Length: 124
Image (cartoon, rainbow, N blue to C red; front, side, top):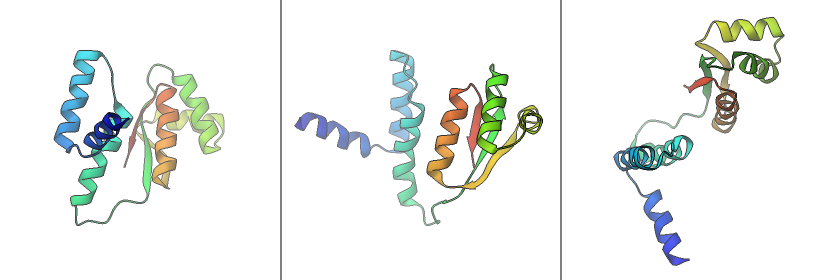
């Protein structure tokens, strides 16, 4: 058990450069794409060194619908409360904001749902 705690502590203390190198190794050598975990670990050390205020509100931007456009349109309709025509318009006009000024947790949840449906999403 102590070995796992040591390993966890090593992961938490990685620099942004080391996280990027780890992500590359996992992808190239093992076929694992650690998207969410790498971003979360990378965000920790970088945020502590900045004198700027931490961002508290995020915009969820749909960059592209991807291969499952219909699924993305249905999800956008559900997430925004828009009608089908308006949701389709948002998806067709990508990049377009899906939700603005939401909390980090809500933005990440929306991003995960949209990416699961096949969309390309960006948080600003």
